[in-house]
Image 1 (cartoon, rainbow, N blue to C red):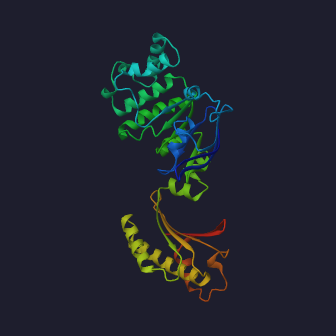
Image 2: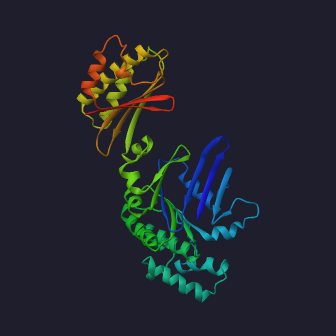
Image 3: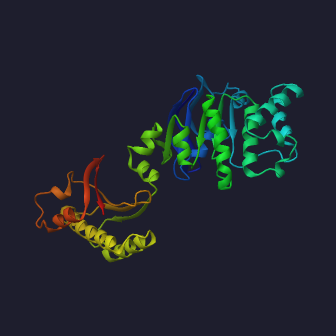
Length: 361
């Protein structure tokens, strides 16, 4: 139903979307997740042309909506959008908010529009609020009215831009319940959300966005239980990172130790574990210092809030090969210490870089 090819959006020199490629079939529910600032909302706004893309193609049922000949108002009617800030007309009643669009834009009679509006209010559980004004409603009720208003325009696709982010936590469930009902009814939807459990339950597919692209996509079971890429895993597991780039043999190791201890104290990681991490960093950097000239190593401490695991990652330039298995090291004591202190040691090559990961228990 929707096909996106090489979509680009930039503001001046800032590239927000660098190369978006995706398809969404009729009836699919796509949840779009990822860190703040990675272009999730911008992608939705480009889909319904609230933002003009800088490049690429968007096709709805085979029709390129970026073509000069495209009927943009008609296309927008096919694709409704629900914003996080409700955007209800404050001077109109709930019923007035639901009927103004169908009467003025769809050519429906007032009676026909009101009959449809009453049915939609019943669907979202707000029949008794028809004559209320927006300022008389709670946040959750306003968002349910916003969804009903969107449905009153009979869209084929609905875009939800963080529909629960402006709500009190006690009101989130009532809005998500309405979206679940729409999913069961077969509505095609793309939902930017930070509600991970909801995304897992309602989605047919999940897009994880990072670095201005759809970094990984797949069914909820894959994205939430077995993500294939490192950034996705970090996001799903709520990983907190401490990073440093080492480009010289004169690297200030003691300043790094201070940062490690502060990081561990902040996340309630035992001091004994922090000391083990310092030992591993010291020995690992000594190995790289022996093997590399100049030094080019990115060290990352990654702490998962979900399973409370602590991991050390070393991303280095060549030579290709696991530094712990290099036969020509003059002293194997550092390697033996690492093998004794660390768990689940893994080596992989990613492009021209070498990645060594190990878990600290």
